[in-house]
Image (tube, rainbow, N blue to C red; front, side, top):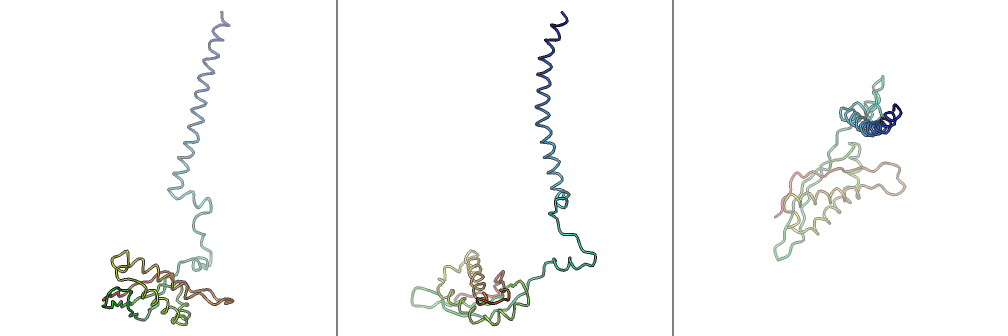
Length: 178
């Protein structure tokens, strides 16, 4: 009789052990994911994985090289041109702006490319209708187009070894549509 109870306990014990095994197989990965997420969002894990900021050098040169430089601004000359208006009465736009550039050293290159830059700006403005400049969406669209044209105008000639100046934004000082 003692053999029968052992046989009965064997399958029950196997079922209970299998259930605990499944629970353990689900719980361990969830706990590991939770701990990993906690370490990630507290900021402990990224430096351990080499994703944090580089450690400062003993002499401080690495910190100075990687520090972001403040942007430089270049004043554009005032542009007054007519818009593409329907009707008899002409519509003019007066635009004063500044170019935000990545390096102050690029001012000389911008001055050298000023005729091309003004030509591209005026050509674009002459094809613009007054309705396209209304509202913040029109101003935003104008800004994007002028940034694109400025970067085209500042592209160095083929074969040049100097880096191209980069315009990151056009800041409007005055826009007057009349």
